[in-house]
Image (cartoon, rainbow, N blue to C red; front, side, top):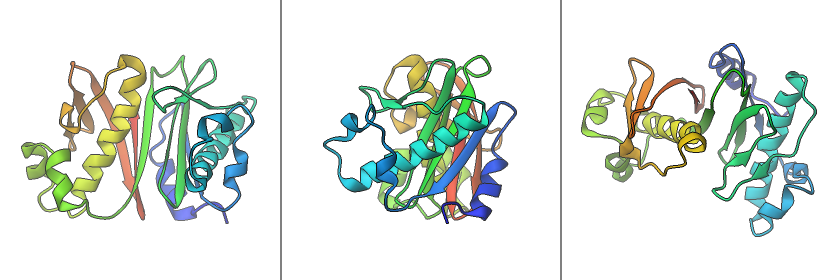
Length: 206
């Protein structure tokens, strides 16, 4: 089995018109999905990383097929971010267990970002690094709130960085959970959607 039906049903609720999103349970052999154009960027990576990266590309190529696109190599840029075929924008993410990809047409969206984390509390020592004082107050009664904020900020960074090319600290992204928006240093406002079904998955949209 290479998919979790409960998680996939939850993930589908993230999608908005024009955005496809899917996942895969990572299995041994997924590392072989890295094509000859892609494998060079992972030559120094351990097998686990190659496997996770291969699984994410399997999902992305499945989404390309759903869009009527020929499966295409997804190279890794100098920053580590994926390089998408002309006319497409997308994002990849993975944990040790699952890989997620999101894809859209560049004519419809400037950029998208996706991130995934286990639905587990964030380590207390990391919370101050991730969340502002107002954000900590907003999640005070939610044991998964810190992990959710972390995942949102990672997805937002993945959406913003290809456009602005700037490095963002976690406190450079201020999250309004009620509004479903994140204000980024520099003035950009990014919408996001999130679900939790064993894993927290966040889609950020520009």
